[in-house]
Length: 217
Image (tube, rainbow, N blue to C red; front, side, top):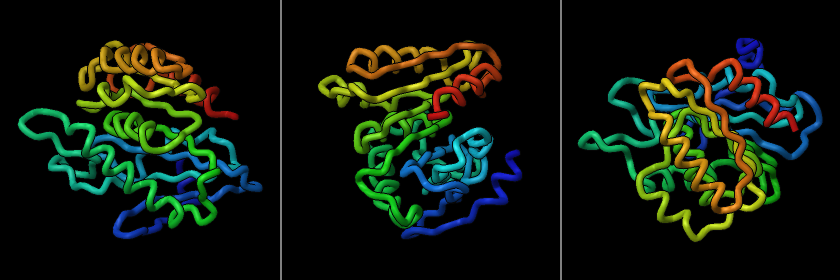
């Protein structure tokens, strides 16, 4: 199924940034689903999460603008063993939003935006809740960028729907990171569905089912 979806995609460059896009295969419902990869990922890796997305939406998987020292691409580079802070993610979130009309020709301020992000892509997803107006977001096995909590405390996220999933035995990103995000966004009015399973640093089979049900409308 992933191969079939990739066959329907094309690479599009917008002001130096690359994205793989798939136009709707049925009449467009004015919805875009953004797929944000994690550390060392690229524009191809996230399509496993798109297998059951509705056929009438645009799907868009951008390549992170930074070269990861471990290969692949990234949204931020750790320094001195510390994760990139929120300013880096916000700068890249602004860059993404500026390029959306180039990747999706009919994108406008009234286009519905949903986001799926994995690991560092989940950190990007959290950041995009600050500078965009997504309807549904699914941060998977991710973390809040350092400094983000201070920016959230006075924000109202009523109307934002979130599906957060994290495995308790994740040895790359501790599950407490997602638990903190659940508490923080819930306290600011977001509707949050949270799922914990086991399976390391990936999305469990039950997590895929939860994600598909969350995004089906």
